[in-house]
Image (cartoon, rainbow, N blue to C red; front, side, top):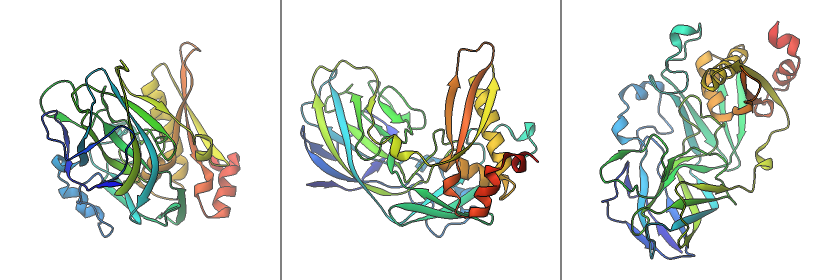
Length: 327
């Protein structure tokens, strides 16, 4: 089995030469770096965020040539196994994140910087938030996976695009598949920004960021004719926890409804930790779901926080009693 080491780039650039070549049906291992490209380590402190070089963000292993791939085809990637290095990180970086521009509209200071280092045993990631011990199930996945863009030039990896890219879809874990359109000969597949776990929304701007080794199978689909990614998921139910505290956000604007929901959960969790810690914990665990878009004029987005991740039984019991949550 071919192992592709972490030779990386961090811009979509269809002129890059491939670092390796694979055939239809090949099973390979790909080594990835964490999102900061080594600027954050297991011994880092929040002070290290102040000098973070954003030009290094999102190191992607690749590009990998898929032999025989031509524009109009598609590449299917099936995720077979993920191996972590025993650690990860979550951070609030000033100016970045879902609530980055909201400091002036809320009494909570969420501007950052903030950093949390997690320890992983392979099955779970653990960290302390305030006086709360948190244990999150690991469902590793790549935040970024994509083929080369059609357009020439150097393009940021931050926004997701028609080639895939920074989609941050947490269900792209073991057993799942993604089909990506091919715009350039050879497809030029790249992968990175790997995570141990993430909430749907990745609200503070980072998940549990971690370097991983990814085992995957590559298939070539001729004449697929797709214009954007398509997913197949197999472990959606396994990712569910047993109990949740949920907060609905109501607004004629889905963006604002989402903010209301996230702030609601952060406000509740801030009884036990700082608001900044609650923001980071939400990014790693909280799921945003659109509850309805038909009851004019207000739509609802609900934030679901899994109580199971809190190891202290007495805290979980308090959060189950809604009169104590709001009192």
